[in-house]
Amino acid sequence: KDQDRIFNFAAGPATLPESVILKAQSELYNYHGSGMSIMEMSHRGKEFDAVIKRAESDLRLLLAVPDDYAVLFLQGGATTQFAAVPLNLCEPDDAADYIVTGSWGDKAFKEAQKFCKPNLIWSGKSDKYTKIPPFEGLEQNPNAKYLHICANETIHGVEFKNYPTPSNRDAILVADMSSNFCSKPVDVSKFGVIYAGAQKNVGPSGVTIVIVRKDLIGNAQPITPVMLDYKIHADSASLYNTPPCFTIYICGLVFEDLLEQGGLVEVEKKNAKKAGILYDAIDGSDGFYVCPVEKSVRSLMNVPFTLQKTDLEKKFIEEAAKEGMIQLKGHRSVGGVRASIYNAMPLAGVEKLVAFMKDFQARHL
Ligand code: PLP
Image (tube, rainbow, N blue to C red; front, side):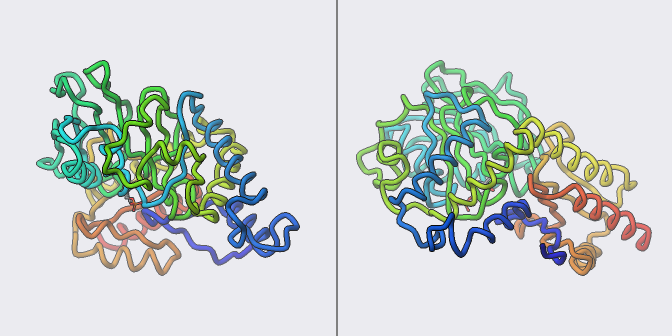
């Protein structure tokens, strides 16, 4: 065990549970007596077959995924799903509704314009993406095939605490859950499609998990590349082509770890506690630190804040890094500070950050 590990507040790729890293390290050279590493093995061999099946069944347990949903391990990042969603759910002339609460939702909306007729039914841009709209009164398109949200905006720190229902009975809710996937229980049956890049809460980069209701599969537009067609991947259990084997293996270890912690109810409690002490420190700083996000929709995962004296932000981030707390710089598009505190960020990391914030404030009044 290396005592030199630091507290990494990166937005993703992000910190992973230390126990997972150590287990992977112990299995890296000779996986289960096979004489090779998991990353050297055929994806069609018995070892990897067991790995991907276990990863899927553990994820199903964690999220209580109903049987009429497929779980896919895909490539191309969540960004590829911005195109795959309309390609799989729409004809080119079909409408789809988008609620845009931050930059990622906006990217999804723009990409969809190439493959269907998306409508922007609400945007938080004029409020600098600090809000989620009230659902009643949202005017949805009666013909929309789906309603798309980004469940947690990683850059702006805005998180849906409950979910809108598509007003059209045949439409489905689609959510980009990249940055709060497996951070809390979710009623999967409320969604038609959930997608998430792994590299925040559940693994290294390289795999995107798609949970899709089975009756929605099989209607892709004819131009859909095979790699984006949910049917191709569902029919071959995510082994149509060579999958990101090592990444899936690590995700499997993370799912095991989350189950050992008591599942997502327990994980959410820990996340709420960590986020609570950080937001309390910001709100209790007499305006020295400011979080612009409306309180009721603040993210448990990504905590953006600014310093009232903005010229001190660089110093804040540099001094924190010297004390072993890295990657606190806000996204280049918004600046300021952002602490990403995913599942694997220990409480001790947040406590250390809060102590540093108080000390820094005392030194710069
Ligand atoms: N959606 C959200 C909410 C994200 O945070 C990110 C990446 O950070 C993406 C989509 C894009 O994911 P990827 O880089 O895996 O394509």
